[in-house]
Image (cartoon, rainbow, N blue to C red; front, top):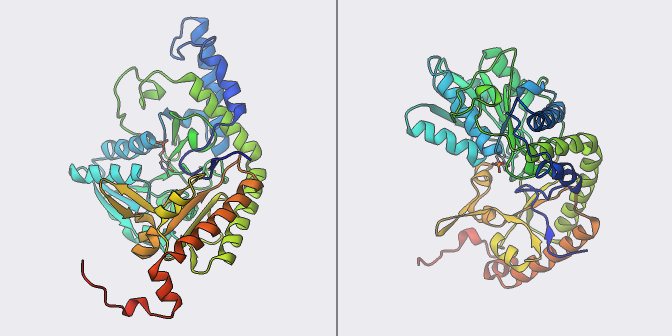
Length: 405
Ligand SMILES: *Cc1c(COP(=O)(O)O)cnc(C)c1O
């Protein structure tokens, strides 16, 4: 086993070596521009792009013509939301989204609100982090043009009832965008069955290269139109200009093919490792609380709050394991995760949370090491905590009058 251990697979994933292998010829030998229509270099590049487009479309049960290449999910979210708001402005300006979306969605909607181009409803989630389909239905107004709800959350892994939301959207004739970045390649995704009209996802969260992603744009029932956010050569059926990064696209295609072939096997392995990690930690450490849904979540996700311990201190104590805490460093202050706050997790417990993100290349040995280390460091930090000591002595911390400082 090699240190450090990477257990932060929701932030990015290592590239699969099989992906790299398929990309290599496209850097030097087959370097053509896929838009060059009049020579063999261009044709070879175009053929590679179209074959990748097929692999990607197949994974999500779409038509290859419905795939628009972007630089990643952030761009896909921007293109979907801004593109719809601009295209359908005569129809209305209201967006329904949820409070636990990724920043790429929330910030985009906020900017449109700030410019007076859109109004928005941010739906709450239940204690497991799920959007309630009935809330979506009740939020719809005459002016609603877009519903944007994510498939699986990047912090807690909770999977939303996307199919039910898609049904409501269809019934009301409103477009449905889904940020499926964490779900594609990990759990089955079918844009037909789920009633999705626009869907964002990215290569680097599914063992492909960084810098390439896609936006699925439905072509029929209904034919979705979006306003391009970049002007130029009119690539990607006019929706996203710019020379295509052929090697990245080839890698993205291969990554999708591998995910399709190995999804069931990967998921079963990850669930077994994740459940063992969860059970061992929970058994050894009292006052550890699972954040998110106990079962309806991504195979590789585990998010736990350890009472009386700061997540950041915990990370500092285990520098040989790459993890993420529920505190976001915004300028000088540590803000507790807005996702955990939306579930109703208190500030203290939100600051005490750690996200474990397991992926294809993690091993049982790494999980053993992590279990041992987490138990050791949490125990050590609690031994140094006056609050923990008081709680152990039976002092009701809520009744304590704290001196102001
Ligand atoms: C990582 C992530 C993004 C951003 O993807 P990039 O390709 O890095 O821009 C957007 N949404 C979710 C849910 C993510 O997890």
